[in-house]
Length: 184
Image (cartoon, rainbow, N blue to C red; front, side, top):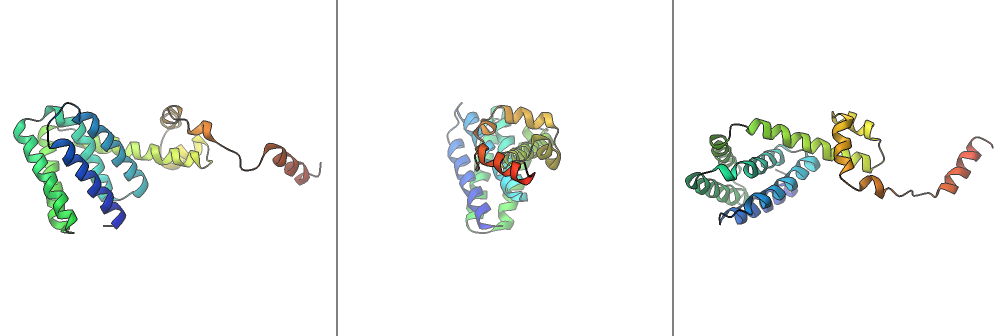
């Protein structure tokens, strides 16, 4: 596992443990924010471990309200084990803990596959949006990421990125350059 990804996953696991140690109604909103951060990691790193944690956090934020007390305690215990094992570079035990966490999630909610698809779709949208910010058209970025223009337009419409575009060369200078290029 790459060190940068490991550090991000450790920080996310620690934050999840801190959120879940005391069961509160605000946990769902905090887990949703953590899930969004994990989805950004998926978009940036495109790593299987980042995908797994992204799906896990997204699933957790969806199912936490439906968990009974025993499942909740088991989940927090496994998160702590996963954190400790990853910190010690014991990847086999970390993976076993992650598998157990997904088993707990699946017992509570059968739609984990849908959550994986949601996370991957969100990561594709964030990647495409980054391409738009770098100058590609919405159509080009959507096509490269396997999205419809509509999916990307919905996301881009909720952000201010399209309004923040600054030209490096002033319009007058670009016009002069174009006129010289065509000998006008």
